[in-house]
Image (cartoon, rainbow, N blue to C red; front, side, top):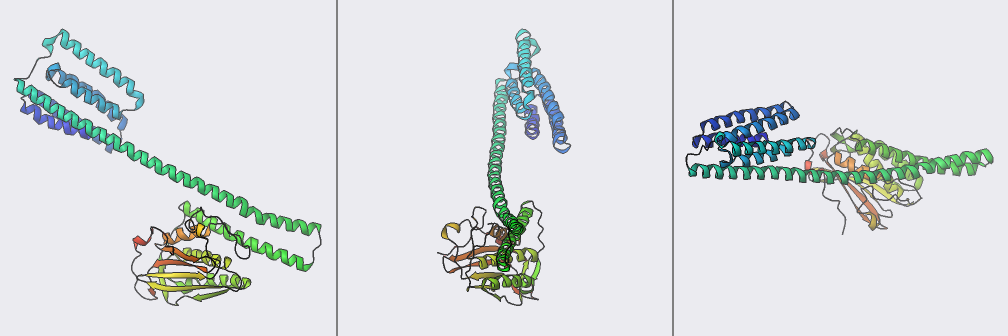
Length: 423
């Protein structure tokens, strides 16, 4: 409002001078200086409320002086004061509306009464009808322009705020759905193994079991405990990421050496299930990635492949070069992903499912894989045929052989528009 007022009053300095109203022109110049100071005092110094109060008081004083020096009712003073009232109402706090409304009405009433009872106190300073027409015409155009600018600013701010509120509401809805998902995960998938352990201890207390029965129950509990540990690890990693607590340390990583420990652990799990896990990663293939994040992503994907591949099946881990990226491929010949789950596979909307030996998942692993891959400026997608298997692809920047020079990560790979699905 200060900038708008400054612009108008500064232009009026020259308009009034051209109309031979030197005193009014000097008054406009003084008002311009004061308004410029109020802009500095409110925007730079931060004294907003004090500046609004001074703006309102000085604006009224200016109007009173303008009424007497600009021909009263014969001039555009009432139009200018109406504009000023609109400006002050738009910037002042709501609790002061009553004061400014009463002040405006009282001031106008007093000035009209003065001119009515003492017309000689408000002389007509126009030297000709032409000057009056010019002054009214200019005032009308200036006031119309100001009303347009102020209204446009207010409407734009309103729509911007509405858009922000809608976005916040959508984010809140997503957050609420996420909270419900996590609560259901914790309530069901964490309570089940704890209940099993409790039941086992109660059986040991009340009954005498032979070694074969103990071994069967212990193996079952061990499997449930491993699944629960994986679920808690994913839950903790995802929660830290949502709280912006995950730092990304991108550097050149040799895939073979970085994933060696993860692959060995998953090979042991695969052997227990009668599955062959083949490591076909190029010994010199390198990417720009965060080693810890990459290990978490690959661990989850391998764990899923083993879970959904029946005994006697095969899981392969391989690499291939695609332009300046390196593509890591985890392929299995398992049961595949049902068609009704594919669109939501990387979101919390997907439901947890059981593996080929009734292994239980929490439904968080693939969400983590997507988020952590994108944090590394990569892409993740999959191909799947029901009953024939699934292949997950992780594309990361900086493909090449160890010792080569690598380009910086491409920003365009950070947020793919959609996942590739086979026709």
